Image (cartoon, rainbow, N blue to C red; front, side, top):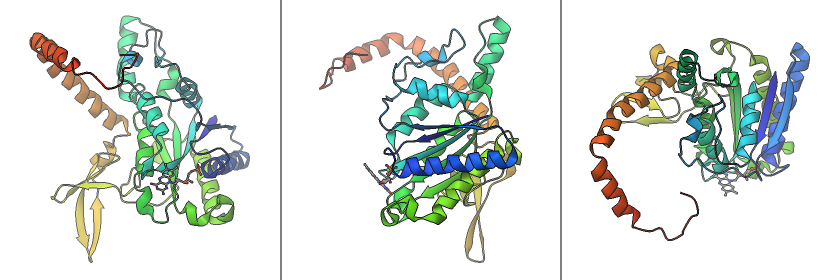
Length: 324
Ligand SMILES: Cc1cc2nc3c(=O)[nH]c(=O)nc-3n(C[C@H](O)[C@H](O)[C@H](O)COP(=O)(O)O)c2cc1C
């Protein structure tokens, strides 16, 4: 089995150190259990990884391989992800959320490799004899995250871990551990914070021990949190007693007991979390329904829409680009 550690921070600084420390935990657990695990480390900070341009070319895959047409370093990262069974991502928090590079990778990897749409597409290919999709698109994977932030208060890293979860969501990877490594400014260096280094090592061990384990039998490393799926506390509220986990999309009910608030997530809501096959199928059906509704409208209103597009295209951008 392969575990890929990806650091998105400065070379040989905090994210790199935590990532390597977690990989050392993976290696220690492999040695202790006799599991055959190969580890790989990748730093992406100087890689050229542009943003998804929504062209849809990746959904064609005529030879069974999903390929983004943008020829930059993402293509190498994608291959590394597909080859891996376990993934550890360590990324700095910038502007309260995750570094833009991870969002670019997520946008280019996630939707293109959506597990529900892959399963559907594979069935269609089996039926009509087209080349089958790469088997790696259907592999289970186990993931752990570390968000690295300078701020003393966790308030300034609030969107770090939640945004990291979006990476693993569309492929229904199983997140088995996470650490919000904030307060790096005061702590100065990971080497001066032995308890954190120990936690990171244990998170790596836990990931290694979970490789190949059925998702529902995995063990969790990190704080328990409010949501039983992502173990985070980021909820949206709408004035009723229902709250929604912003990461998983599961709905829970607010209950008060002894002056304390508790959110209860019914089993069916946990089962339909965004990063599960059930949740992904729900969204796949939603997209199918949108197409069913919007394609006849586009056809019916074609002349009007073409005219309006021409009118708006005449409103020129301040900077000319060479590509559409
Ligand atoms: C542009 C920029 C924005 C940042 N914004 C935040 C922030 O919102 N919250 C925070 O806790 N740290 C923030 N930081 C600090 C970094 O998260 C911190 O320095 C971290 O250690 C960087 O990771 P590295 O050492 O692996 O490169 C920011 C740093 C930069 C360069």
